[in-house]
Image (cartoon, rainbow, N blue to C red; front, top):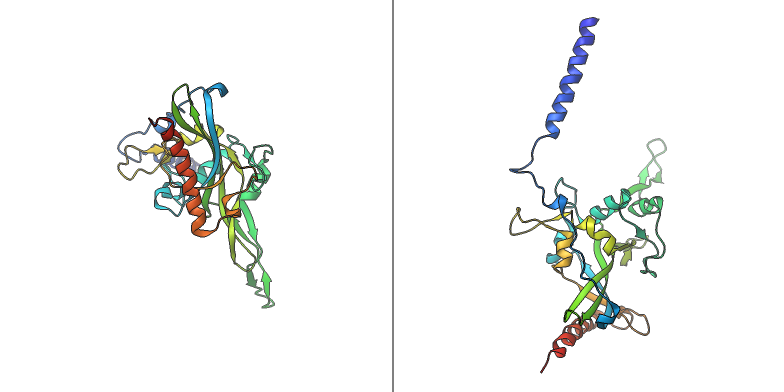
Length: 280
């Protein structure tokens, strides 16, 4: 009996030491210290008196575009990288970020969501699937758990302010909010557009994004972060709304190719405003 007890104790010690050794295995040639310790570059101080022109726009990042793939992949989390929605979800679960509700009509960050409301957004039950009852042979509704992960979020909406700072003589931009969007289907499976999940106040999310790596096609050593990608504007997008007296989006009065042309027109107007300012 004593020998058996002693053997079990030795076995537990061996397993514990083995697991600790496994945890200390270095997956790479060196320890990565840059990204986990990155700090956010503070915005340049801005006074209202220095802003001589500004325009608010809402733009859409479609993750099906090649330039935006780093936001979408990897579809499954790894030790080094996560898709943007997984970074946001983990930060929300840890209480490091605040999600704001009513994303369809309110992007002014007035209604914060509780943790239970956030989890209800990320975990849903599909009641349209059926399964055969092994006892009766009848087809019964079998709700299946559907989690909103990297493979579900296909677009993001950005809310941003463009302005000209006369103190620095530059046209600058500040992202105010970001909103993930998923595909929305009817009960019959017909696609009817994209549904917004919630809004995140972007300045609050910057420290989180600064410590989350993004894949760099050129070199695995010079990994950028989501903060770098947004700061350097390394993404493709189109404008879906600008501030206007009717408070309406472009889709309400433009369709198809005309909508994209109107989006490019607004981009050109922003660029030309600064260009014309220095025209002699």
